[in-house]
Length: 304
Image (tube, rainbow, N blue to C red; front, top):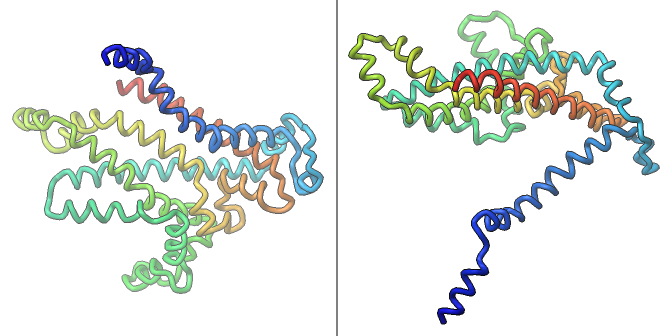
């Protein structure tokens, strides 16, 4: 019996090898779901793949010609510009609002539980459904927003929020912020719970006011999690698609053409130039990666 037991123990895998073995199914799944599509998109970006090639099943190799085409395309450069404006505005507003709401919840008022419930509601709404809801809110004829402005006397006429090139990108940004804000609030609220309250008590004894306590204690201790939110939210904002599809579909004109919408229209609209669409997605992924590296390399190191 003892010999059998010792033999069984000798056949057990070491912890490192056991961890690898347990993760093999997950790694295989990720390889099929992520690695292969990424490789195949890279393959398509280097070949001419349009409707004619899809019919023949032959994709001629064109090297970097697809990348050259998108950088020569004025619409792609406009889409990148709109994406940068959208990302800068949405991420900045989201972080400011998230910090303010997280601090409000942390006050432990009687309304805190209600507030916690309400901030989770947008997170539970699917992106397309959220966009459709906001498209009705923005409606020129029967939109709820125009009715409020008209009733309160703030506007004498209806405003085409999603139909005016001057306001269309802003109209797309607001629903995106509304949908993604709960994620940032939850992270900041969790970070606030980990701050030692004795720091605030010592600062109060020294005569520090609420603003001084926030600036010298709260904000420095929140900087690591703010960097995480910056990286994640910037990456997702650069790939915004659902709100554009549901509210403006790139219009009016090309006012809300963003990088992801450009890739979609190139690859899935006539003449179905999938090679150019794949190349544009890779350019977008490279830009997102460079921004993430800049955040981690510049901001995070300074924070530590």
